[in-house]
Structures are given as C-alpha cells and as structure tokens.
Amino acid sequence: MFVFPRILAVVAIVLSGGQASAQNGIETVLEELRAVQANENATERELRDAVVKVRGIVNDFPASDAAVSILLQEPYNGIDFSSFEQRLQAATQLASQVPEPNVSNSDKISCLKGKMPTPPSHRMMVQFSTDSRGKLSGLPEMVEPVNSSTEVEQFLNLFTAVKECEPFDTDASEVTFRLSTTSDGGMSLVALKVPLDSESSSGVAESLSTLDVLPMGTEEAESQMDLDRRAIRDIQARLLVLGHDPNGVDGKIGRGTRAAMRAWQVSIGTEPTGYLNQPQYAALQTQSQAALDQWLLDEDNAESYVQPPILEIGPGNLAGTWRYSSNCGARSKLGRIRFTGTLNISHVGGNNYGGTLVNSLGNRGRTKATIRGRSISAETNFGLLLGKVRFSGRVDENALIIRGRDSNGCSLYASK
Image (tube, rainbow, N blue to C red):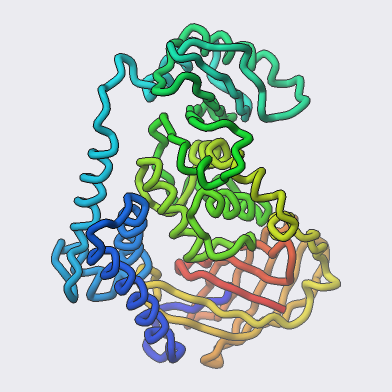
C-alpha cells in the first residue's frame, strides 16, 4: 500500500544515524562476549546467553564483519565465537554425568500418545506426582482449563495413559510432572523438581526441565498462532520470570523479545530461532506458571501484565491523515531502503476506504482499503510507471497504529 518499486531505491535517502546506531548495538554485544570469554569461571547460564548473543549477531546484524566471521568460523577482534558453544557443551556434559536411566522420560510422549484412543483435541494441562519408583502417587489434577466439562473425556484418557506408561524416571523421592496437550494433537511433558509453593521463583525456573523434544519454531508457525497483544504480554512475562529479559512487558515483539525467546529455546535444547510455535508456547506456560504466579503478587507486575482496554475503530477515527514509514530489508524486492510519507483516507461506505498517498520522494498514488475487524487489505496504484503495490496488516488494539507488510516484502508502521 505504501511502498514503491525498485527504480525508486536508487534515489532514496536512508535515514542518517541508522548505521551508527546498529554499530553501537553490536559493539555492546561484542564487549559482553569479550567479558564472558575472559571469565574462566563463567556459569552455564552465562555461556548459554553468550551462545544466544553470537547467533543474534548473525540474525540482527547480518551485514557486519562480526557476522561474516561467525559464518566463516573465524575469530574477530580477539573473540573466538566457537569457544562459547564448546565451553557450554563441556559444562553441560560435566553437569549431566549421572547413570543413564533404563527408560527415558523423553520417550514417554510416544507412549502417552500411543495409549490414548484418539489424539489430543483440546488444550489442557494436567499435573501428577510420582514416588521414588517413578510410580503414580495419587490422582492427576487438571490445572487448565478450570471448571470445564468439555475436556473430561480427554482428561480420563490422559489419566489412563499416564498409569499405563509408568514408571517415570526420577532422581528424587517425589517428582511432580506437568503434561500439556494442544488442540492440534501436540503434547509436552515437564518435570518440576521443587514444590509449587516455593518462595523462590528463580529456584522454580532453574529446577524445571523440558523432557519432550519440541518442534522448531518458525516465523510461519508463529504467524499462524495469530498472537494478540495480550498473548505477547503473557509470553514476555513468562520469559522474564524464567530469567530471560525481553526488555519490557508491553505486548510488542521487538529485538529484546526475540533475544529472550532464543535464550529460552537454548535452555530447553531446541533450535534458537527466536520464533515460537504452539507446542513451545504450551511448554513455556507449563514451565513458567509457578514463577509467574509469584511474580504477579507484585501490584506493579500485575499492572504491566494486564491488557489495556481495546480501542474501538471505525470511520470516526480511521478517516483522516496518517503518517507512515516503510522499511525494506536486504531481501526485499527493493533492497535495503526506508520511505516515509502521508496518507489521507476517507470512508467510502461499508468496510471500504479510499484516499491519496504521498511518499518522501513526492510520488503520489491512489489507495483503496478494506477493513474487517482489525485486519486491513489494501492496494495503492501509482499508474503505468510504478504499478500497484498490495498491503496487508492490522490496526493496533490500544492505539491508532497500523503495522503490516506489503507485496515488495517491506514492513510498514503508520500512526495518526
């Protein structure tokens, strides 16, 4: 809707300061890596964070000399990037030098699924405890959903499957497990090795271990989850209480949230892509629930966690003048470039809007847009010379802000 073809890229001016800001950001990361490299007594968590930072350089600063050195597996300015992963592997092996159990809990997922007459069809969280022999002690408890009758049959099937798949491996006298299912048949198993009412939320976070190998998160899988601001706040808060700071619980996914996701993914042994999928989200909820409950006891935390009121939208506040910026990455059809401009739109009936767009180069186009709910689909026609550009996006739930992506592969941010 708001971006223009490649012929404009050669005359566009990239905003000054962008490269300097990026350079400052990567220098900060490199200094942190140098400090970890110099610390012979770096903890396993510090080494995990260093591995995440190295991978983050490739993702966030792909054109930098440091990223090229990482891909070529070469040192850069005295930093041996491969050393962090080697030291982490050594630390992990040292910490895990215990006799191997006869039956691996990671295999229990296959057993549990095999014992159920039909695949899981509801999102559910069940908690059960085992004794020193790994045998079920007491009845399983339904943690989520609460007071629901629709999942009773699945709960009973899970109860039977848990009983038939015992014993569960344990290195303690009693262990509490949480078993989560998703509506698409997914399942994850997590062991809690401390009581749920522990006063130390950090202790809870450290003592959790994901026993199922979760599928890799991708941008497409996360997009299919259709996360709203409330869900993003929930994810950010859960990452925070597990020790992975997303740089704010604000319902917006930025660089800090992606880095926190990667750090958490490293901690559970899955590919650190920085993108979630539904099974990973279910595991994150299970792993963080006890710590989150403690965190929410603080009024300030609870206030940041609660979703602000949803802003109603319609012709009264959508029509008018919008200012926008459109950022195109190196992989877009236009190459790395940034545009700014204004859009004047009017309501033309029903869900339809129309108007005129002007960009920072003085080019003009006619825009048609359709809004359903908070989703926008639009097209801007710049005539025979420049052609048409399609756009899809959403209106923010708490402010007059539009975010989305166009057919050239460029992202867009517009505000009123």
